[in-house]
Image 1: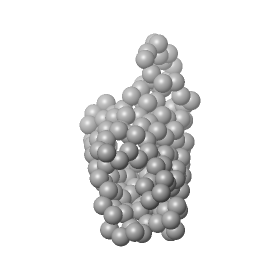
Image 2: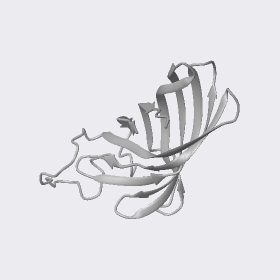
Image 3: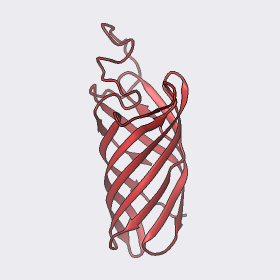
Image 4: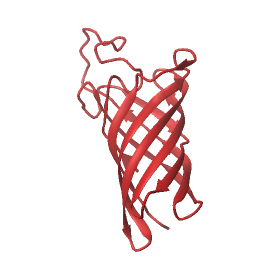
Length: 169
């Protein structure tokens, strides 16, 4: 489970500011069940099944399948993500990571997107087992997307903080 409030330079899913969002001008929204946020803030989390392959003590390849809803006021969009990441341990607790984010998303209609994340973090461990990763990241969600035809862009990015908890069964 990753909970990550993010700051963005516009609407995280469409690249529009709240004033430019289609259908938002001059309309008041009825009360609804949602998480209230400021116009440019989003609340998101990921839940899924991770797969980590430890190539050597310094390099880890990560993947998995994750369900990722994004709450904006008053909308809810969702995504199914299959990230592919390479994490490199600079020293025992410090790491850097590059992650590709292929996803199927919904924002009124279903579309494909490919993004990437650059991440730097710190691992808190108990002995040789990691317990918690805390990191800062820079993410471009829809670097390639098919919502408005094939497009490559950089106008939709997120700077944020994240945490990943480890549970070994």
